[in-house]
Length: 228
Ligand SMILES: *Cc1c(COP(=O)(O)O)cnc(C)c1O
Image 1 (cartoon, rainbow, N blue to C red):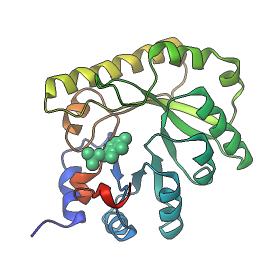
Image 2 (cartoon, rainbow, N blue to C red; image 1 turned 90 degrees about the horizontal axis):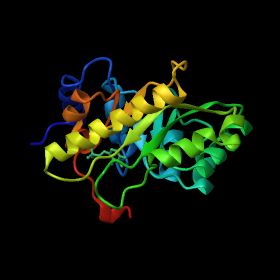
Image 3 (cartoon, rainbow, N blue to C red; image 1 turned 30 degrees about the vertical axis):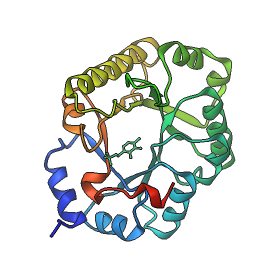
């Protein structure tokens, strides 16, 4: 017999320091599983598809904090603007502009993280330092009133080489430190480093993660063929 969602959640929480936020990544999982985790005390959930997140949000308690963790297309921002707590994976000025525009329609200020490319793999989304500098120094960014940058997010390479994973997390922490001193030194809200998933979150915490995103360890393996 495998353990229930609430039991797995409880075990994982015991391995995470209190000051680190756990995002329970519920993508592809049914609302019943989310409800079980919620009833066990989990408030923050992560999804990577806008319409899936919108559909689940409508069915679940209103005080759930929803983190959007995947690549967000500009034409999908509108589905989540009314309720999303944190958009973790902003990887372009164009996307940030659209979030700002939609947020202003809802009179909201939406917290966002800048996603950086830290994996040695080719395929992952994310900014590099030059692109981040250009974004932060642009007139467009300086005019935005309905978004708030709160830190950085990254995904390590999918590999068994944990030394490599650790190097990539250290790299993200260095990027955070550089942004903090260069652009956000006076800004207490710029404080988050979101890194670490089921396979590597303990290393991410050792290297300074303030947010970890854990899915399969809580909800079990995902069946991708059914959803993609
Ligand atoms: C799916 C996903 C996770 C969680 O992955 P697990 O390995 O199931 O913990 C974390 N972050 C992002 C961006 C994801 O897409």
